[in-house]
Amino acid sequence: MSPYAEFASQDVQVEWLAGIMRGAAVQQSKKTLGEMAGLFHDANALCSMDESTVVYRVQWTEPVPLGTEGGLFWGSTTIAPGRVGDEYFMTHGHYHLKRDRGEYYGAISGKGMLVLMDEDRATRTEAMFPGSLHFIAGGNAHRVVNTGEEPLLFWACWPSDAGHDYASIKTQGFGARVLHRHGGPVVIPA
Ligand code: S6P
Ligand code: ZN
Image 1 (spheres, rainbow, N blue to C red):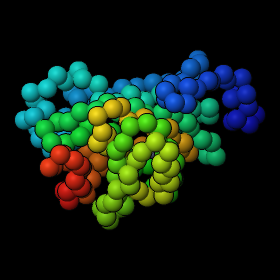
Image 2: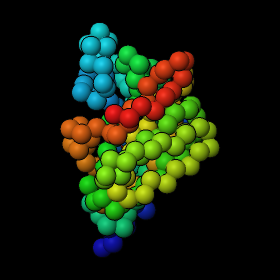
Image 3: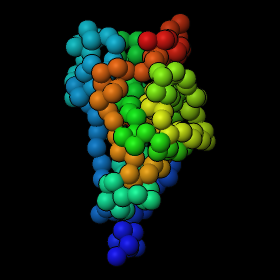
């Protein structure tokens, strides 16, 4: 049987502008400050904050089993506004386990930066704003930073066999951080 046959019976609805997915097949997760220890550069600032604070929420659907070649996953991410010291709230960030797998991000509301890092640690950013579309080429680690005062919402589409390599980011970080300086965001080499 085709690995895609089951999806025909799935029933997922989206509220595009709210980033909400509904249906039995929808999965969701959230990441709290406590779960992100070690990712922000100011450990002291993190210690003084409530570790149960939700930094971002993700909803997604996997119409084929994780690891299936040729399928696509779809989901939304909403990053709360806020900072740990001078560092804006952000996603963990990851490479894909299958390094050549790409991804699309499309921003709906809020503003921020997509941080992209290749395997030589060369790091660059793209501005995210309502309507911005981002092709993340294979081989690039990706993280989103909310530099605004409202939630930053984006939709994403990625291959079902991409997988996630979080460990490389946990141990080596990105080649740059987005910090609040002189009243706005500045990209600082790390
Ligand atoms: C998956 C895609 C997104 C992220 C989400 C949270 O490939 O890039 O759905 O999972 O934005 O970020 P992270 O780095 O915690 O997975
Ligand atoms: Zn990804």
